[in-house]
Length: 281
Image 1 (cartoon, rainbow, N blue to C red):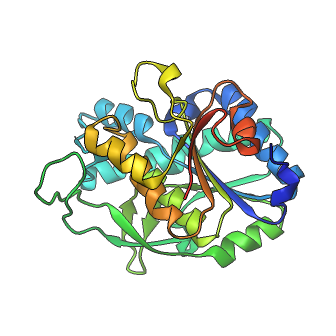
Image 2: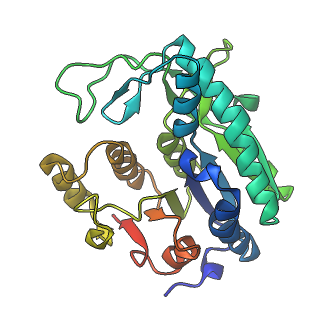
């Protein structure tokens, strides 16, 4: 078992799925408590959140049905407006409230602010699980730079930066970006010791309906085999693909972990594979 103090001065990045923001007390008890413990051990923390469920619900209320291809959302101009409202509005405020409940000094914004996440529009690309032809995802961004100096300054001032998964460019354009991608790229640029991808799913499962089939640890080769065989599918594909790519860019360990029980994140931080799936080089 590893002591948290061994990571003092290093960065941890925690990505929170949008579905978790609906329960403020639960989010505070799990993610908020873990972040507080990390800070107490001298670890620097950045949080990234998504907002897919909120955007889907809001879009449907406005008469927009989401288009999902290979676990990724197609973002037309109307969908981008919905994503702005969900990410920078509803979810950002809920995460801020949960962090305050946990007495964590979170400062919530999006990657558009001050150019924290610089991005360009993604060209049509072949997507795993979506066939052989390139897919145009619309106003979706590829990250070209992360302002790590700004994140370092916020941390030095005592804040935990919390980023909604939007990016932009110097021309004033705004792009929707998969939150797992944002978290992974931020973690890589910060040379983070650990990246936690937190959701309602307790890791990578051989049978998605059976939590007891969780795979505690996966190497890159094993993960690719699971994707090729279809064991890893749907929305789990972007998480795994980003995880594999970022391991090659310097992140020491990536953990896909569930929010329950409340100690899951802390347990996983101390003993990789004990509560989630740990990706190792």
